[in-house]
Length: 182
Image (cartoon, rainbow, N blue to C red):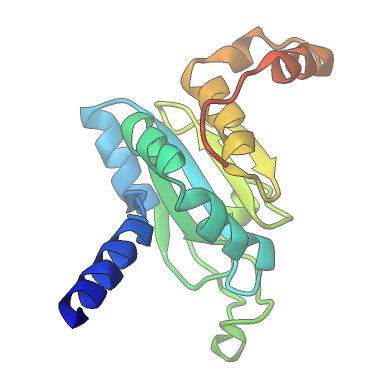
């Protein structure tokens, strides 16, 4: 009887464990180098350590299997602390955070020069870059897996080139049928 009890516990335990899919995060420098070998767009998560919606995006959206599979297949994914102290070289220029205060590592800190380059003023912001690392668009705010799916597919399929007005995008978004689970 005791063995049956332990067996049932193991079966229930293994059946409720969900395998979290991981996004293959790389640095911006690595993404640009990878683009030279195999062109793909870049999805860059601009986050900060203190940002609650950024943490929700990590937990609820980036851990989603559908999101991770799609991003890994069609994009180079970059996670960048927009208030961090990293030195980054992008498009022949070096970016730092000269105002960085180590005492504020997990609090509001100075904005990184690369974040300023992309005009990031709110977190989280997902920056999409084309196959030549040129800016396509920054998308501001927390997104569920299905909300993110819309933008991933818009940029992956170059649908953004078809939008001449905000109404064009809104019509596309209303007609969009998400396939990712939330």
